[in-house]
Image 1 (tube, rainbow, N blue to C red):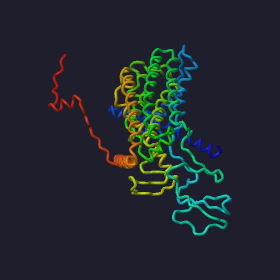
Image 2 (cartoon, helix red, strand yellow):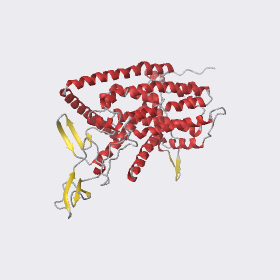
Image 3 (cartoon, helix red, strand yellow):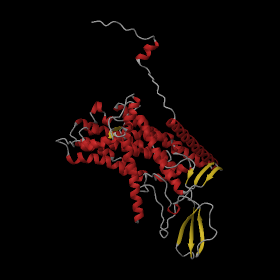
Image 4 (cartoon, one colour):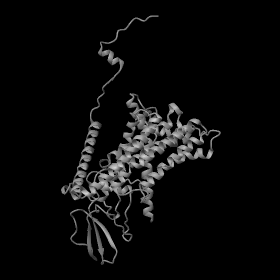
Length: 491
């Protein structure tokens, strides 16, 4: 690994870590803001900065910053009979595993070094013969020169990146492919499961080492819940791995880019994975390990200061990393409908409607932006889930995992295997039909994205309407019946 590759690795680490850190902080604000909207409250508005006598509240966005300062300045309490080593180690494990997990999640397609240009056509110019050093130059599209510098023996036009295959690497010319993931491991999703399972250890250690019966009960709940839903989480992905034919996350995205998004080929697995992911994060309606009405605060009851802040922040970071996995496996990752490495290709079966060559760098940038926007949308949906569904009882929680979600994931594996074998034996006619069906799903996704983008723009720039809407109140019912009569007060 040379210096440039080390620099790119550092940049990729910073991109992923900073995205998780900042989005997790914004999610703490989004939870408060969404709850206030649902419950008809003002919401976060107390944190303020005064500049030249004017107060800036920024819709409550200063609250995550205030929370961070508060955690740093609060007392670091430790129970007298607690295990000092394990008590301090538990929040580190909870926080560290989350950020280690993002190393194998791809946030964009591989960048081909020999095609990294902004505009124009890319030519390889050969000086003095085939054995001499080559030179790469860029010229504007449609303006290829008729004469070249003296000594040029021949030239070759590199008209775009291949839609399939791997990028070329040439150390002599100084270019090499750049994988947009920190650690492009061959084991892929297996490494993710190995790390995500370690979060159970952090919760168990925190409850046991606190010397508190409520913390211990919360740790037992957390361990049993996370083990239960970890099984469903893994089983729900077996069908997807059967179809994709790989355990590498980047190859899963490429399959979806060329065929159909995973939510269309594995719809049941998508909902099973989403439910198990919410349960793994121990968020409402699966927050039994931290149930404040029963266990005070669960396995981190005795934690304060920055140690509590690490547990608190790790929960939101898990929401982000889980959303990244959901987007990568089921929502196309960095892929957008009809966009491929070689540009925009609108095609249904063998009929091509639009084929536009786009420089590789712009396709890559568009894919990276698409990935992060999808992650934000999935996180936003989880905020709605948190403030919509009521908390389960603990026996209901365990029955849902073992008696409903796990059998459904096993049934999904069986159905996927049967259908996959049937399609393989059906011949080319079935393959062609599925290819057209995949193109239709891409069109559906494109129309859906366009619809929500247009609605969002209209809602952003349209007039704001303030309407008072009282639903189901006693005053509303009384008004419909002619109002109420005031009676004289009596002693």
